[in-house]
Length: 437
Image (tube, rainbow, N blue to C red):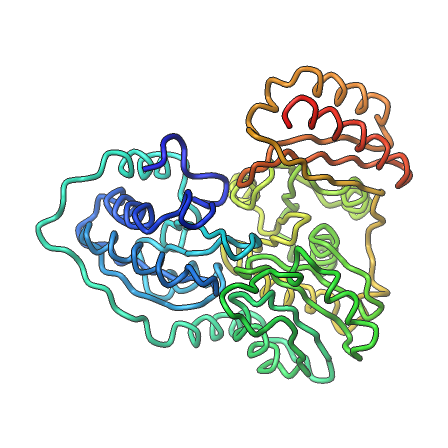
């Protein structure tokens, strides 16, 4: 079993056959079930379209059954379906086999506490301990069954929450060859939209390959000649989305949240303020201030956005990357739901003409490093960061942080001009490479 901490900000994730093996998947299933400390818990397992998915799904399910859990296999579905189905069926635990926006050779396992959302830190730590120190086998193992109608139930949940009439609206959807490839087109069609799909033919290896929200240029290039009114680009597991207007301009999570928040404020149903992460553009904060909307800032990660929403008892939050959470729908990001929220906020208006925020020029560079955590002790880097933040005070900012899931240090600079942002960022990137590369 791999030593050290396994769970990052989004579950266990890594290269299949290296970090993530069938043995580890079985151990996670067994430990996650035992950590619940209930009799015979009911556990849902869903996955994305990676070729390693069926192998890891089987091993994970075997571990759950070995620990006495009753396993229900939901097949290929977006990650947010785990919580919606848990709400409908009363599952005690839900597991998703997916590496989100990563390439096909990676995979991951995310655990959700039934309908409540991702595991809290205490439960996650207990699961880790049980992985390294396995529980005593139970007298009677559980069973593994197929959950028939899981896709239908997910679509029904979307349709019941978003009663939109999209007749006359043409949408272009990039499904990243991932878990939205069937359900995204279906829900938009049911709501009356004219739908065209791209990257909706998964082969196990093309998930996120030059498509999806991490390669949104594919959708942006297609929009001007497509005749579509609006485009949406999902990631591999369907929990995030970026929007593209008819001219091919990309609108990120900040802009989507800003549009939804201002519309809900005008309608009187925002339910407080909004929660975003430290990555949100300075222009977002200016727009919210102008609209009289309070903003709470958290660490990067949708789990921290959710924690912020629960602490403030607010409903809406999100990340620049396109994770949008509206707790009146579900306690997790859902790319399809966020797209429908945006269309509801637009109310038939054109996205290209509906901006409510002006973004400050931003440069973000992901620096590959041997040990992402060693950035904490890189005094030379932090001295330079402090100096740059002082120089940009009141007109921009610098943010340097380790990735929560990959061997990367992210360097982000916002400044009055793109050239200044790029120059400051380049200097900091060179320092990070010299210190940690």
